Length: 320
Ligand SMILES: Nc1nc2c(ncn2[C@@H]2O[C@H](COP(=O)(O)OP(=O)(O)O)[C@@H](O)[C@H]2O)c(=O)[nH]1
Ligand SMILES: [Mg+2]
Ligand SMILES: [Zn+2]
View 1 (tube, rainbow, N blue to C red):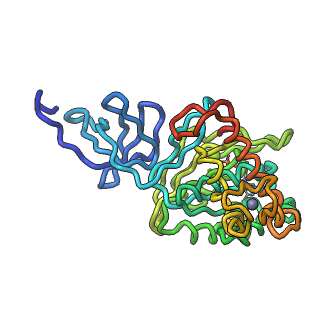
View 2 (cartoon, rainbow, N blue to C red):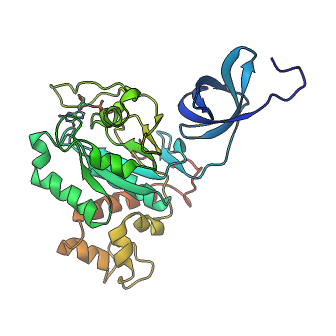
View 3 (spheres, helix red, strand yellow):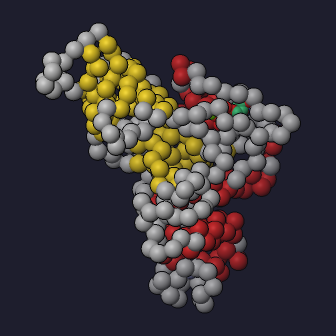
């Protein structure tokens, strides 16, 4: 027990799970401790590095005193339109889709746009490619469209060939998070890659083919190949904090590439004359579906009054 008035000795730890004021902290020796936040206003998420002390002698509960600076923060807009931290210190975002549940490509595009705006690597994984639905030409075309943009686009199955080797290679040495709709197999992929994780998986209800939420909080696991992998709860919807309207296009590589060819330097690629982006979408040289995702993000920005700020209420939007 620290003597009254004496500073407790602080250690560095890594938050591997957090649920409200309670969290799990890994110390530098790799030992896991249940912990709690010590200090008002302190907020940490999975992936954060923190300073902690032991609550008392013979008590290995960690009292977390402060958070160390973050290199990256994945955020989402919550139901009240506020930016909410999700996971810290990532280097890579992996969006998992499957033939079921039916992919919501807007969600995928929003994850990719958020990654572009915040300088994070991103890739997409088509899981469950053992299912016949994975061969659907439309699904294959969408996956190929991400590869064409230069994003890693992998096929996996946790049950049959080709297995998860391609994903394992993509994750090696990176700090990655698996994100996407519920039921696409994120926890199953984690289990396949980190067998000791034993994340809870569940059977998709055959009646509605809709995944139920089982993963309720993000959890971090170290990979034997180096780096770490975070499993996250599935989302019904997702939007990252939004930049200004004229910066939305920077979340879409094909729009960034074409924007210089638009007649107006401040073209929003809506109805402006001589817009190279709209023309390309009409011609089919870029994906008109992703162009639609771009327009819906612009609509979302337009709904907010005043200059959008990262910390300002944004009204009701599609949120995760
Ligand atoms: N056919 C098939 N089913 C899978 C595969 N991976 C996961 N599933 C199933 O998909 C359902 C949802 O998996 P889960 O890992 O909980 O998804 P999560 O919500 O994204 O974490 C479970 O019934 C899994 O058994 C796969 O590669 N092929
Ligand atoms: Mg899960
Ligand atoms: Zn334009």
